[in-house]
Image (cartoon, rainbow over all chains, first blue to last red; front, side, top):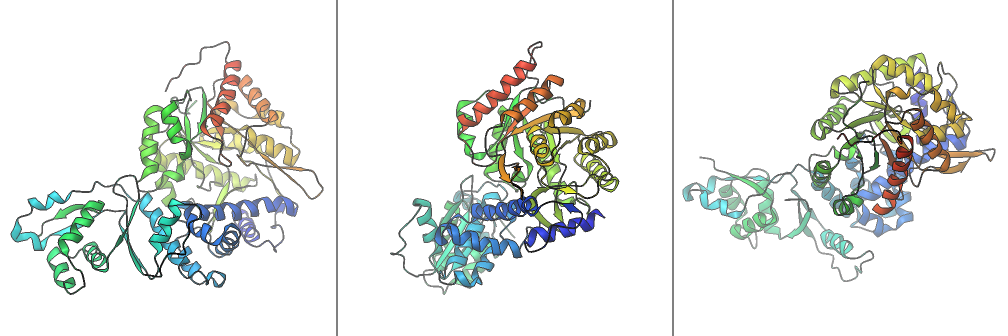
Amino acid sequence: MWHDIQSDFSASIADAALPTPHGVVATTERFNIYRNNVAVSLSEALGQTFPVVKVLVGEEFFAGMTQVYVQQNKPTSPLLMEYGDTFSDFVETFPPAASIAYLADVAALEFAWLRAYHAADADPVAIDVLATVPEDTLDTITFRMHPSLILMSSDWPVASIWHAHQESAAPDLSNLTATPENIMIVRPALDVKTAGLSEASYAFADALMTGMSLGAACEALEDIDGFDPSQHLTELFLAGAITDVITNI
Amino acid sequence: MTISQTAPLRAGASFKADHFADILEAKPDVGFFEVHAENYMGAGGPPHAQLERLRSDYPISVHGVGLSIGGADGLDTDHLDRLKRVVDRYRPALFSEHLAWSTHQGAYLNDLLAVPYTDETLKIVAEHVDQVQSHVGRTMLLENPSTYIKFAENDFDEVAFIAEVQKRTGCGLLLDVNNVYVSAVNHGWDAQDYIARFPLDHVGEIHVAGHAASEDADGSVLLIDAHNGVASDPVMALLTQALTQRSDIPTLIEWDNDLPDWPGLYREVDKISAVLRGTNSDQEITDVA
């Protein structure tokens, strides 16, 4: 039956040690064309999604690492823009990559960038919209955040590393200090923007994203060093991260 | 004939984002642009903005590469929904998919894998083509594959199989003359005879592409459908043969790897235009888009 031949075929593609599948008449050279097409095209797809990871480890290492990933993680849909959602977790536990401690977080940032790139479109609103909110209801307002908005925090300066690679093909990373970074990724129009956020600003954005009202967020976060809600709000509006303000009375 | 009536009888090109700025600026005389459906299945962002813009100047062909029509498992209905959304949004002049499989038991293999030509697979493929056409709400073109292996059991040769699927489903066909040549060399078929027997009346589009060469165990040539260069002379000869038999078929240069710059790709569009002009010399070619 065709279903059974396909099962054999799939297994032989995944494992070059297996013979040519039952029901197929071909030399190993012929069957290897399919094995090669599948392995190489998926590895190349990961290379397009994770270009900075590829530069950080070098082409040869990347090819070897993605080969293992592809072996263990076949795409579950024909949308290659979704392939690699578990790559950061894989990198985290891939022993040969352990010497680059920040590699997994760079992978997470690159995948977040791609999600923002393909996210739904929406028009941000300007901060002037707050002027239309009656002052006595200001505490109750909640915010509709842009569909592309992603917040990420890392123990490493991954946004700085990522930015350095946008400026140069082989940037000098020796001046980077091992400081944690909070990152906001958003695509208000056609360009994906990444920006660093302070601890307080990150906590505020995160609170608004979870649907907390302005008043509740201010109350919950007031003890954080450098907490300044009007400054944080301005930052979010300017980044295009807010698409609507909702008055809840 | 039930295939789309809005595709111009002219030469088209694969659309690649790398060429977008050049195309906008040069406004080249291209009959249509073809895109891979899967690249426009995200919710939003630059891909859609580009395609909306391109579509305002050129007819579009939507070419699916991930539906796995030849697979024994049922079609992925989520993917079918996504395909319908792309077709509904861009209302393409042409809409096509492959006689191949790529998904089995939930795993997507990202290649167009060969299907045996048996009574069993004929039933599967015809049902799937029916399902696509009724779900998406329009006629699809089914493309002949390039293959590297044979199956032990076959009840049909490839042309007879494709002709039977067409007859059962009323679908249109996409004749890829590079695939014909690649498979003919790989399996020792007669490519000219293949074209001569192909049901050209139902062909709504032709593909032309480049291939690469490899070697079989005995040192003989194996061709690989690489879409990485200009079409070879034998492939252009097959195009001329097909267009001499039936001259009014939109024809695309397909190029996916080792991309040239836009002028380089446009030169290939020009070559196909010249073949189309040659075989249409006795009639006016009009852009009906």
